[in-house]
Amino acid sequence: MPTSNPVIAVDGPAASGKGTIARALARHFGLPHLDTGTLYRAVALNLLRWGGDPESEFAALRACEGLAALTDDEELRSEAVGGVASRISAYPAVRAALLDRQREFAGQPGGAVLDGRDIGSVIAPEANAKLFVTAIAEVRAQRRLTELTARGLSAHLEDVLIDIHARDERDSRRAAAPLVQAADALLLDTSELDREAAVAEAIRLVEQRLAR
Ligand code: C5P
Image (cartoon, rainbow, N blue to C red; front, side, top):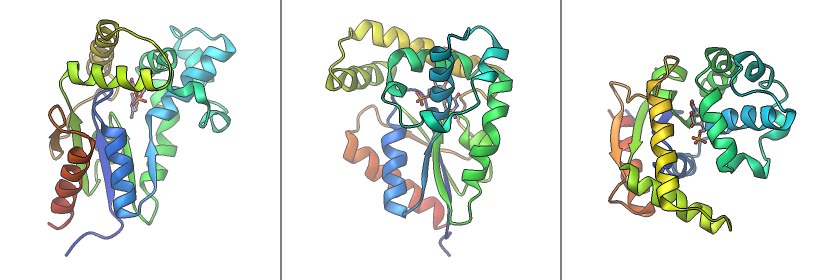
């Protein structure tokens, strides 16, 4: 009997394609979608605008207030904001402050798709289907570079690759909710897949899991 109103967790490192996949899954299954990275980015942007110190957990916690006004801000996608987001997301107080709204989203009666780093492990451990989306760092760096170029920004591949490695390191080594593949998550390596093939494979894996 297929699961109705499923909760689908999509985790993975930066630029792995998890955002694209999560949006496509939400469309395919007719579910609401939450990109949880946006919450951490909104805290980072709030902190930067207010001039708070990213080295201070207390300042980062204060920046968790009033996020609703920032969730559509153009600057959220910038590399500067992403870099600070990756730092402040290591603070347990920040993770705790953002926990309830993510759990509420995951718990809505109609089901939901969430993507991030700790959805399958911490936010929705009971999710009906979990994907861990990854790709080798060089491929992820190239994708991020293409994305930046399309937005009219210039960057060098080597710098983007260094940044990807730094984020992987911070996301995986932090003590609070590190990036890990949950034991029951299905691995989807998109290194050799284009967007369409990655989405098709994600849908196939989730449908298979939900049909069990
Ligand atoms: O996915 P995105 O790059 O937008 O996330 C920005 C940062 O927020 C990541 O580098 C990661 O450190 C953090 N994050 C997190 N947990 C999540 C989602 C994002 O720690 N569930």
